Image (cartoon, rainbow, N blue to C red; front, side, top):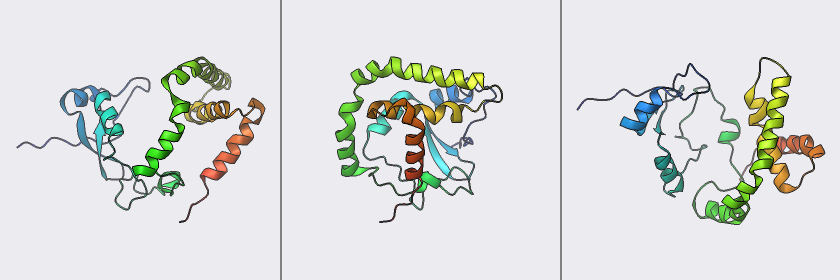
Length: 179
């Protein structure tokens, strides 16, 4: 049996706005493929939407990032927030109960109703990023603030208090939890 090459992940990508060319081959020939992370750890890459959806809906799959055998992205990562113990359960019956409790707030109808407001928020953030000139940091300008703005909107936090809310939440996120 011929062994197939195990690609390194993340896949090399010379163009930032298009997926790597290798994705097409993986989706067609090896939709569930082993990959090697920068740490040297092995992981599994699932490349087709239907397969990803199935994995995410299957309670047999869990990703407890603080597990001793959890794959690390880099060899020297501290893990930070990803390896911190969460107050909220990330799998099993406890996780199901939390999801059930918040599911009514995240229906397709509700998300579709919020779409114009969320798009307007994204437009404002992108406009501000473009106005600030080069180089641009998409993660800092959009990736962190947009979810915070949306959460503030859902909770009814006034726009004027978003920065303070973000600061407080950031502080809470970094508090170590001990059981």
